[in-house]
Image (cartoon, rainbow, N blue to C red; front, side, top):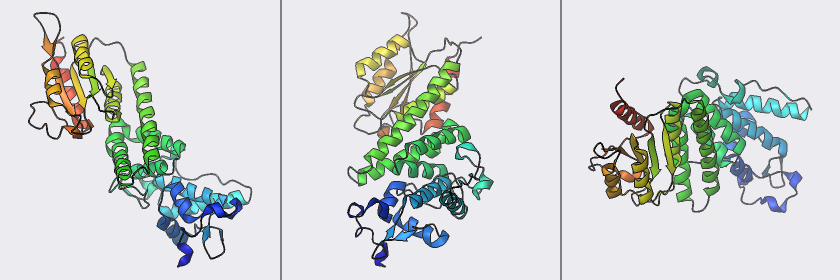
Length: 351
């Protein structure tokens, strides 16, 4: 079985036309070498040539075929059907006659029936990340990020939001993918940091685009805004960016202060703005300051004699020691939205 051992076939000592090894290709496309070999055995989706010693060598056409296979399976198409389409594309290129894609509508979106499964969690190929039982789109997004395919990452994000809306996309696709990349990064030392940065940047860009588009379509409002901020020392802003975008889509005014907000600046903003609610995010217990949260909750604003206070929501895993703080602790985006809706209704002026 020495033909499957990739460590003995360094690409650097072979001419470019010889192709790349299975291990190199696996790292590029974000699947395991075992998956590539399985595709070869089951569907004939293998390298066209082998170097001396029977090592697998994947040419540029072979790589293009595998990338097409990854794109199709990431969209939810069963591997057998995806392999047939990928091979047809490859044969079309070899013949100088490109084969038109036949899988799904523009953007890679397909219906459950086209995917061959009624379950949104069906997936038959891995990303190398500890994802578990998640939506197919989550695994497709992870695969694109691992192979550093920025265009595919953005395509997956846009398609997911269009199909499922931002709340479902965040809770069932984006958050699990980010958590898996974070776990992989922590367990693999400095490896995968580039994957985490690529995925985070594209998610942030998508969320901010949705926010800007929603605000541009809003009518002016006299309602008090919701302030969203990360506590001092906290840099993880993506969950708050997701909540900000959803609130904007729902017409709720927001004031997003971002990451690592100094305590004095946070209190000053509450006094100046008089928000309907304040959402504080903490990723770790080291940044979750219950005394600061209570100080914000006790901060009064408004004209003298009619001063009032803002409700405070503690969001993020860092607050797990604050269960008896007496402050609101929503578990996830959906619950935070419900609490903010209740607060907005409670503070809305009576017509």
